[in-house]
Length: 170
Image (cartoon, rainbow, N blue to C red):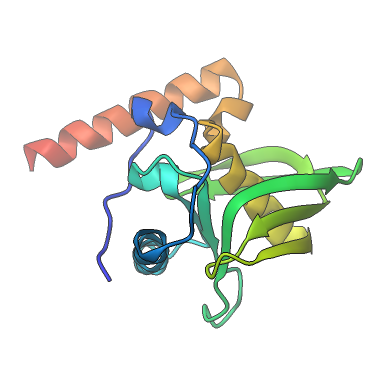
């Protein structure tokens, strides 16, 4: 397993819309394993392939306390979302150190392929529902800061660009 570099906002590649996976083959299984290793190393609970500059519809998630219950979603689609919504603080491995409130459905139902290419449906609520919605936004080329006001988004962009410059100097 390889650790993959995570793109950071405002990298324009984060706005690329992911294409459907044609076949769950060895290449996709390797990608999934590498994404899980990368997510765990970065102490995240979710990672979309878009964030590692692979523009295919692949998401990995693990919201378990023990970090030992990975969920793989290939070509996910939300087939139902509750009308009830809730605002909760979200963070993102592509926007390190930034957390802010985003409104999401409190419960969803998703259809996707698993890591073996089998179709499945998952009902989710709470943190898992939020995480799935967040990661699926990445597949559409959307980063959570785009839900924030233009002023907040510009402040975050300035902060992220400064952090990148400081890292490049070091």
